[in-house]
Image (cartoon, rainbow, N blue to C red; front, side, top):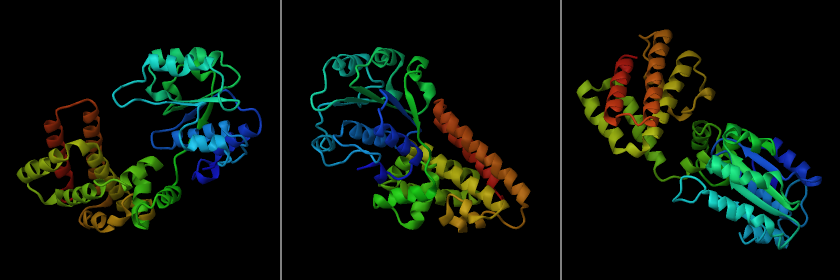
Length: 338
């Protein structure tokens, strides 16, 4: 895999290619939200740094170093990621895998590369890494991945070059999914918008064995909101949420996307701006002519605010039953004749 085989991120790939033409720095931080492809691009840069004949498009892919890297047996590459049983990368792992390892010269080529998931380093872990960044041997190169620069200590930020990754446009997400053999054209359009421009999120959702059916169940729930009595909604509606409790954040996100689409559709009716472009019938049916666009948008805005409040409640460990029941009542109030 070369840089050109990675969809999007042209600016970042150009900077990394230029670095390979000259003398690369000793430390880079790949910045972007989860699912943007930070680790994928960082690994490809690591492969190029260790390659015997790199170019502006990255590693050659055919030398012994590249083959060892692809087979995950390169002796000069260290990958420090969070272990499943831990909440953070332990300080001892930083000291053993980085600090102590730096004293050993490369076994294979002229460089050693350390890929580190910096989001999982607490302050102590970052301080343990700092000395290595301050006084690195000339053969060491550090590649850190992080969701935001603010998660790093200022002392670390001052010693690294930032590589910022941008969210993908819908066409790029569609190409990413097509390359993975995931989704039809219509489905790719939905995942591209629902994922918020995050390729990894789109791949996870499109490749899952649960999201498609959950979305269909959520669409049915949404269609029935204005037709159910309070009692039915607080029983069947709550049962729907409770039986899918582990996926509650996703259900709220699906409902939020539908409400946002209705706000757009009630005003401009521009299909290309909608997340759920395959659900025009639902969006149109829920907006009767008897309700003015202004009143409909007001009700939809209040419904959306209730969904956001429920999302915050999940983050703060609010009472699940009370939170969901309150949400259901607000939604019913706004959607009856909305």
